Image (cartoon, rainbow, N blue to C red; front, side):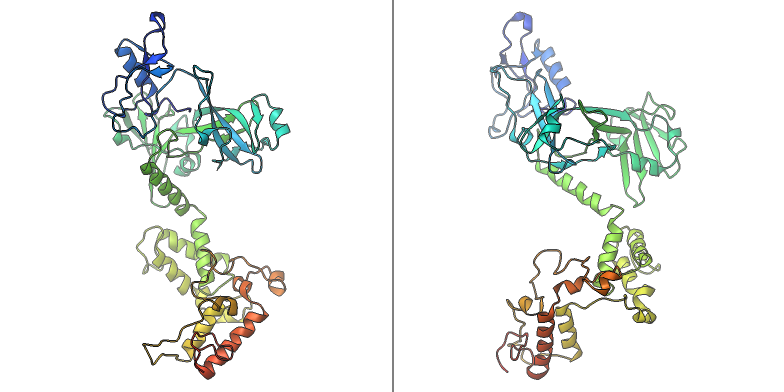
Length: 469
C-alpha cells in the first residue's frame, strides 16, 4: 500500500547495488525489533552498510520482528505507488482512498482491502468551486485518468501544498488565520533548539504569535511557519501555514481540501483512535452552531417550543462565556450552570404578559402531564413495601409515553415536528403533539379520572400496575 515517505512507518529493504548482482534478496540492519523509519532514513541505513534501498522479491534474513510475529511488517520499496480517490456515485461529496502500487516481481499488486477498489470506507470532503464530479459510469469512463467500478469512480490524484500567508502583512486579524488554516502543528517548543525562532505578532492583532524557521521573517513566511492563536473559545491552537488540496487528474479545476486525520492506515494504533475521537468531539463542541443548537433544545424542554432568536442568542452567549448575570457559571466556555440559569431566568421565560401570546409555551408531554397531576393531588404512598407502579409494557401504548420506553436517544418525538392546521400556518413547531392522537388523549383522561377514584391502578382505564380497585 502507499505511504507518505516523510513519516516513520516502515523498515528498510537493503540489497546489493544493481551492478554487483541480483537485487531479489533484501536484508535489514535494524537496531531493535519492530524498528520503523522514514524513507530517507531507510536509504541512509542501506548506504551506510554498503547497500541500497531496493524493491526486493524476498528477505534473506529475519525481519527484526522477534516476538511480534502476529503484527504486519511493512518495508519501504523503490517501487512507485499512486493514491487515488474513489468518488461515490450516490453522494459525490463522499470519497474513499484507493492505493495502486507498481506490480511486484510476479506481476501482482497486493493491496489491503480497506484501500482497494472495492473499499466502502467513504468519508465526506469539501470540494473547491462548483465543478461537478463524475456521478455515473459514463461520465467517469469518459475521463482519461478515471475508471468506473460498481459503486464509484476511481481517479488519479495529485496533492498540492501551498503557503497560505506569504507575509505577515497579508493577515488582518486572527480570524483570518482561524478561517484559513485547517492543519494543526506541534508547538515550536517540541523541536530542537534553534529550529524555530519567534517573530512576535508581525503586526497581526489579537495576541497572535508567529514562529518561523531561521531562514524566514515576517515578510517571507514559509509553508512550515507556525501560528499560535487563542481562538474565540479560549483554546490555544498551533496551526501550520499551509493549504493542502487534492486535485483530480484529468478534470480541470476539480479538487477538494485534503482532510486531516490522525489514524495512520499503515500503522494503526488504539492510541491514535482515541486521539481522533477526541478531535472529532472537540470539533463538535467548539463548532459555532453548537451553542445555539443546544440553547434551542434546552429552551424547548423547559417550556417554550418557539423561543425568539434573541432568547436563543442570550442563552447561547451565557453558554459560550460561561457566565450569566455575573452570578452563575465558572466563566469558562460550555458552562451548563450558566446556560440553565439563562434558560430559566430570562425575561422571555418568566414574563407573565407572554401568557397572552398563543405561540408562547409548549404542549406538556403526556407522561409529564400525568405526573404533574399526581403531584398536584399530593399523591403519596402509605405502604413502602408495596409501592404502586405504572404500567410497564403498556404505558407507551396507552398514552404514547412510558418510563424507559423511548425508541432511540432522540426522545419520543422530533423537536422540529409541525402538526397540520393553525400551528403549521403560523410557521411554528409543536414537538410534543407528534405523540398525541385521539386515543392517547382519551386514555390519558381515563387514567386521570381512574386515579382520582381508585388511586394508581389499572381499574377503569387506570395507568397503574396493581389490580386492586
